[in-house]
Image (cartoon, rainbow, N blue to C red):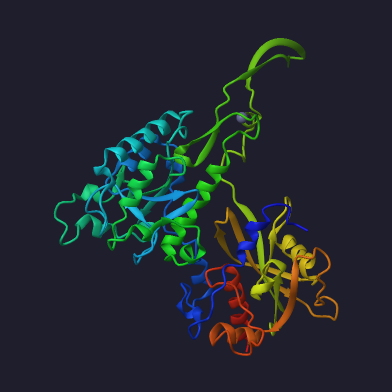
Length: 464
Ligand SMILES: [Zn+2]
């Protein structure tokens, strides 16, 4: 049994049900069903590489200030970790920019003194590592990174300028840091504690497609954030996971003192400045009375602290086959029994487990099946709230015992079943309705669970 905590988060691997109103909804999803494994790995929903995080620059407050006030700087907004979207726009995630003429159908935030004062105050707090960085009605700001050539930005086009772009100067279209790091800075801003005025300001600055007030809102509906483009999904996931971590950590786990975000939101710092004096040390074989000051906070005493940096929880998730891949084992959780959504086996890793051992343990605990071989094949960030899904393919060597299903160990599942791979293949490639009298559903195509099941099917095809 591994569901020690955060059980509801894990249930999110079984994403919302889609009714198959078209011939096959999978074809309309962001993942083409013909993608190779390498393409799936590189283009994983929520995990596409769309930002160069330049994490080594987070602690350079002068760089951060230049980035935050730069005309090209982009911002995505959150409220209680829900992203601001424009339902009526082609691209749903609302992306703001400081300067005018930077984005089509946008207006520059920098025109507003409210915004200028807000971001300049944050830059100052960030530089001073102020204890009041997130007090009062101050929003929490996170530097996400640079969109640069390494992630596909067409820098030469920006340098040349668009044909109809006559007024925006080249130096305004992208940030140039020391001639070495050139790109468009991206930030996330959490407005949970911000003034109503600032929240309304952001909503009113969503202008693409001239939306009505009802079309612009902070959403917690999967219908919306599973409908993002891959770039939007990656930006949302990146900002959301950091903001969730920042919003849940206000006090030092070592000493209980207030912690504040530093390094542009990339790190939390304990504000306990007290020190303890130790008076007796051994020196040259004798005990001597000297004074050494050490921090009163135990977190500050450690050379490597894992409570000061953002947290990611590892979850293993597995599609299971027999050795010739004619069978695929899928499971139905009790929580989702009504929806008939059969998915992969999944569970949190525990301390001091390898991925392979955790995967075998989880399969046995949930299904009773003994798995002999595990291959790690792909991973997916899962921002509900902060998981990394480690996707594996497991192989069970059928011998009359290994493959037997027994749900009585941890009683997580309503059912687990060996399906014919050919049947699953039809559901993915032809129609979910073929040979499906029970109206069984597969996971949503944006999930790694779907990719893993598809991979198991594809590998069977390759062997035929
Ligand atoms: Zn502390």
